Length: 160
Image (cartoon, rainbow, N blue to C red; front, top):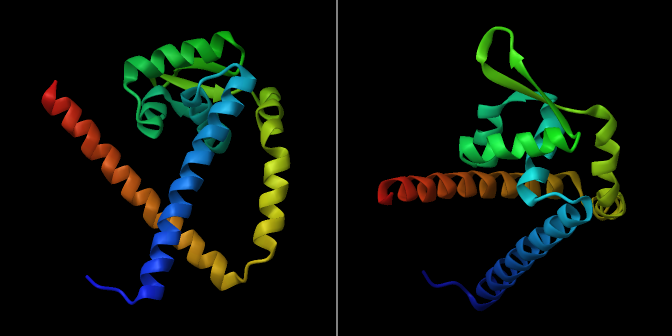
């Protein structure tokens, strides 16, 4: 598919910027996790619990795309470190309900505060239409990531 030079250049710039944004986002997440004495998977779990309040271990596994065994170890570690509580579901004793300790949320948010303020200033300069375009773009990318993660996991299970 041939593109006019200006479009091809703009697409190349967008792809390059996307790759660099992804790389820096990952580097930032690793730095924050290290500062807190956690792993990136721990952070993903805690971010999820901060959003939803409580979840089952299975829901955490689904969200983080980790195996249930890895999630069990992670939740045990986070519980021991005082970040979460884990209690048996009274409706189904086989399930564990995991809850973020509310007094630890501010500690997890602190490393992001300066960056969040900068992002707030950045998006103040965008129109409503631009914000909707960006939200749509990220939504499409998220769906593509999830589909690829499923394919990768299926491939791992097939080859195992």
